[in-house]
Length: 145
Image (cartoon, rainbow, N blue to C red):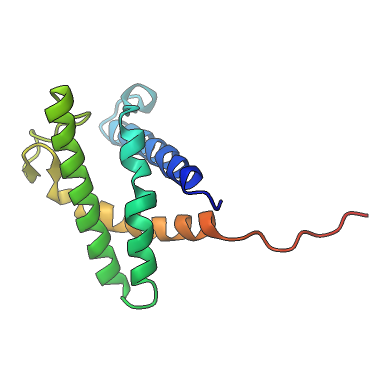
């Protein structure tokens, strides 16, 4: 998928799906019905879509230059920055963010949870493959006979 807009939409959609899966899984672990506990907000679509202009250049820059731990730490820090800034902007413009972590022990201003660092690091590493798949050119197509 060569177009930036197409990749923005792909990241936005992937983010919403992962968030639904994550919140549903958290509910299931608590013993709740995951179909009732899974939730997201359409406001999150553009936040996840920001992976196209923000994540892709970082991934391209780190590719082949940094090991897994350095890439993972960079992605986690970047995701935290985007989550914090977007949450702050939501609060400023809408009066609240689509999420509120103020109940969590390792929360900063209710906008990020430091205990999610391993999750964001793993997500960044997983998104490397997604990025590569989204920008890959299709190979030659077999001729039908």
